[in-house]
Amino acid sequence: MNPPSLMHLIYTSAAAPGLGDADLEDIVQVSRTNNARRSITGMLLFTKGSFFQVLEGDEGTVQEVFATIVADPRHSHATRIIQEPIAHPDFGDWTMGFSEIAPSELEKIDGLNDFFQQGASLTALQPGRAKKLLSAFVEGRWRARLEGVAK
Ligand code: FAD
Image 1 (cartoon, rainbow, N blue to C red):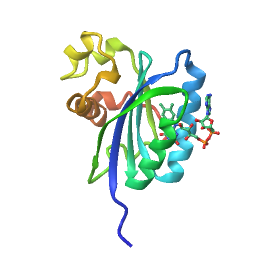
Image 2 (tube, rainbow, N blue to C red; image 1 turned 90 degrees about the horizontal axis):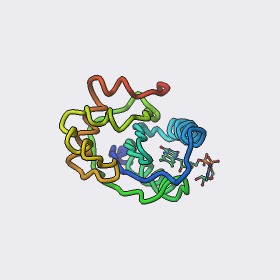
Image 3 (cartoon, rainbow, N blue to C red; image 1 turned 180 degrees about the horizontal axis):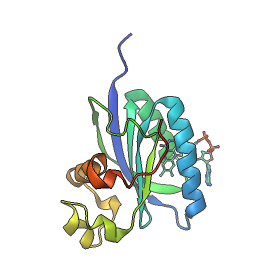
Image 4 (tube, rainbow, N blue to C red; image 1 turned 135 degrees about the vertical axis):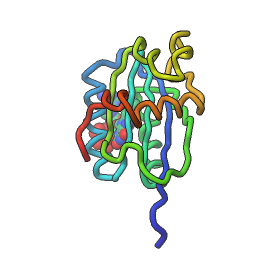
């Protein structure tokens, strides 16, 4: 049997109107439990009513989880931005690192200052800027903003 192929899938989506803190906690808690079982890692950002999520793991499993997520009525307009093979997971120690981040903080991320200062939302991210956002959370001070439990 071939070894599982590792990939990451990055998407953005718009939160359903009225989504509150309790819903967010529920999403993060269920994600961590399910992802640990399926050896999926990654991170989830929430700001100004939109989500940015990185899912890493075996290709087939990531696609399955993404299909479940897309069907979830707690958000809409899920748009896959990046899907590609990776050599190593960037968030191998997080079942789902989570950060709720203020728009004013996004403006401080190197390379994305202008984009977010113009009031753009996560859902307007194209692959190039999505990679910059990913890099900020893979390394340096932004990584420390992710909260979560170790795998
Ligand atoms: P349950 O949690 O018991 O849910 C059963 C069904 O009810 C599901 O179809 C679910 O979509 C729906 N549901 C649950 N609560 C509500 C609610 N309050 N309002 C409306 N419908 C509801 N799951 C993962 O496994 N991994 C992830 O990384 C992940 N990331 C997510 C990111 C976002 C932005 C969102 C919105 C959801 C995410 N989820 C994730 C949750 C996923 O969509 C499913 O809800 C979950 O995987 C189903 O878990 P479960 O089988 O234990 O069922």
